Image 1 (tube, rainbow, N blue to C red):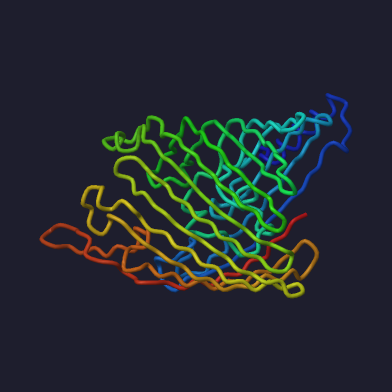
Image 2: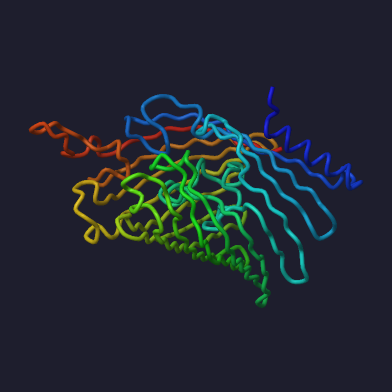
Length: 369
């Protein structure tokens, strides 16, 4: 019987430790997870939920291994089994970091530093809401890259500016691809900056890349060697009681792919072990007139409003409740499943949208250990 990825990973780390006569004190194993359930009011839905109770979409478990090679070098590996992928284990990050005087260099598979919560995207316990904004975070399904980066802190008075230039390659996994095949992304290059000013964080990110050659039959030319540019700007205030987060992004894709822009925000207030919150998100295509006439497939717009509450009911555990209303803004809302088709004269053609909006009810328990 084949060993699981987790067993292989643990064995590798332990063997490495024994071979190098390293102390087990140099190995730290931590974990995180979420158990979620939700349902939407129709079969177009939102956040992966439709009009059937789903226990997988927001459920996952992960393990993180941090092994100190010496006082400057460390290996970090994160293994995640995600319900939306039938809990098939996948290595989400695996990199070596080395602390130089004044900066840290890292190499391997790392999270793309696009947003405020990107570094701990799968760790639901680390953010206040039940899930990050679908209009911002879930739009960019490329969540990691393989390459190198630098973490460069710069002291400016009583503030710190951390610069993070990065370069490498990435991949749109088959499990996330609407094309039914993986798409390699080359020439990934970008920079992220975080400016820490008291209780405030201001951040900026820019990245670019290009799809590699894709074997996609007659549509290969439509997918291959297409350039993409991404820009985001965000700010967050958190004084331990009040939380405010605002993020905006813009993507520009070459040829027939839609350019989009979006904004998300959340406001929360800590009351004892509870944090009620209100959040909203908006996204729309911005270049409909520049692309070929695809009728209702030409573009879309969507806006969401969420109210929820986080309850830290036990040490390292949080219960979250969330109700989200989504308005498709008289478009398909970005969901092909919202297109109404009819047979007219022997031809099946799109004639409208199936639903104008939806409601999503969801609950999760997030934990770390």
